Structures are given as structure tokens and as C-alpha cells.
Length: 249
Image (cartoon, rainbow, N blue to C red; front, side, top):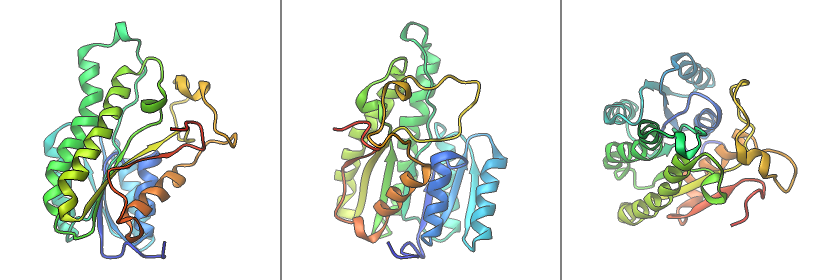
């Protein structure tokens, strides 16, 4: 990748106030892209990402809102237009609850699927007309290793993340003639900031990487940058695993 291979491009990234989403935003901005940041409720985090991008000479706009609401998707697409265009959509927003099957309420089921799956649908519907105009657009759906290797007490999360695989393939077919690539990136065992009072996710204790180390958010972000860049135009409809060998498909 060149230093500024994404210059003149614009990216929308859901759930980009912290952790992997934040790293994706900063990394795409380093590549030259202007970025639309999104957070559901923590405005301070979103504003900090915008400030860091601007401090380094980039452009960014923060849009607050829950992606399960179609209005948030429309607002983010409108923000991209303020930046001049839209080339890349990164569907990263998610919640990863752990709840035993018998205790999952339908409301919790809908909340998880609403953000992960419905949110990706709303974002694509709002953003695809703009991305089609790019001539070299890219959509990256962020999944998760547990959707492939399994994990206890995450039936709602695994269902939603697994559905993103089919969603990705369908979009790759529908958008190919408009020169838009669509891929699914599945991170695994990433060292992200977590609530110190929350228990470790079950699969984090059950699985280990081949190197013995967890990945960094920046390492996931670099894969996203590649998939958005000119060197990945022949890659579409694929599931790409980045997990240090913790899961071998």
C-alpha cells in the first residue's frame, strides 16, 4: 500500500468510536480517505476520533445514532455527501452479549440482530446508490470468529454474524456490475478495551492463537484498508479470517 492510496475517497464506518472501528477510521484516514464516524451514544469518543483525524490533516464528520434505525443510515449517507462522495462502507457496529438460551428475551434477540444484521441492511440501502458512482467502491462487513468456531451463550450474536456471510455473497453478486467489491472480514481474539467488570467471552478462554498472542485492532484495520484499496479489486464475495490461527477454516 502506498502512503495515500485512498486519497480523494470517502468512507463511512459504523461503530467507530472505539476499538476496531476506531482503528479502521484512523487507518483509512492515514490512507488519505475522508471518514464519517459513527457511535451509538458516546459522543465524546466519536469526537475524539474526529479530532485525531483532523489533527493529522484529514477530514472527518461524526454522526451519532443507532444503526438499527434507518434514519441513522440516511444521516451517515448525507454526511458522506457533505464530504463530496462515498466510496467505502464498513459495517462494524455490533453488540456481543452472552446470555443462556433460556434467558434470552425476544427483545434482546431483536436488539442484537437489529444492530448487527438489520443495521448492515439499512446502511447498504442508504449508501449503495452513492457507492455505485465511485467506480471502485468497496463494502466490508465485519463478522467474528465465534460465528464460525462456535461459542456458548451467543446464539443471537452467532446467528447475526453468520447471516452477514450470506448477506456479503448476495451483495457481491448484486453490486459487481457497478464495480463494487463486497467482503466479510472475521477478526478473532483481538486485544480490545473491555468493561473490567464484565467476564471474558467464553470462546476467548477456550481458543488460543498459534503465536500465543492476541491481535491488535490496528492489524484488523490494515486488512480493511487493503480491501478498500486498489490492490484488492479482484477480491469479492469472500470471507477473510484474521485470527492468528485460532480458527483454521
